[in-house]
Image (cartoon, rainbow, N blue to C red; front, side, top):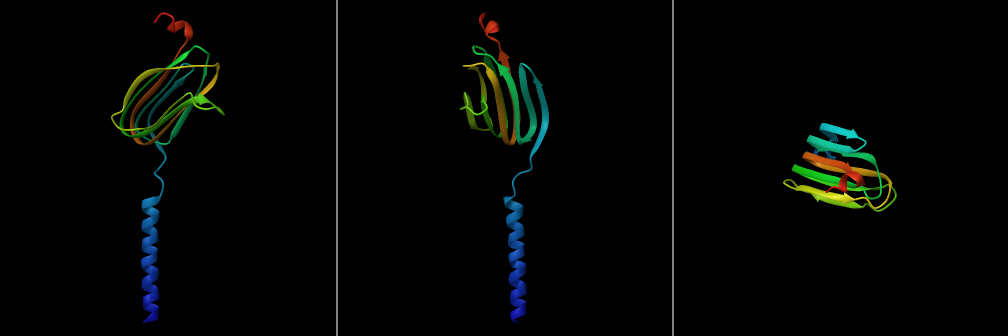
Length: 138
């Protein structure tokens, strides 16, 4: 009788452990979409993004980044900054339905890293460099 109780307890413990592992494992890292990157533009259009994407862009003091996004589902974090320094812009936990269209002024010349971290997200995000000379006519 004691062997049956031990065997039953072991089976229940294994089933519970399997359930914990299945339901607590981190989501699959994935990017289903389009990534466009060139010296003055960084665009992500995604049907499913559950990962981190980043791009480094050379920017000069006085330039600006035109930033726009539309988050259809999931959650997204965005950061812009020079590595090793505090970010010049940060948007954490942007939810489904969030839209934005604005400029980020560049305070100093350098290589800026743009990082987009998404969790089960769908949408699009774009960063376009606006050189100081281009902006003078605005």
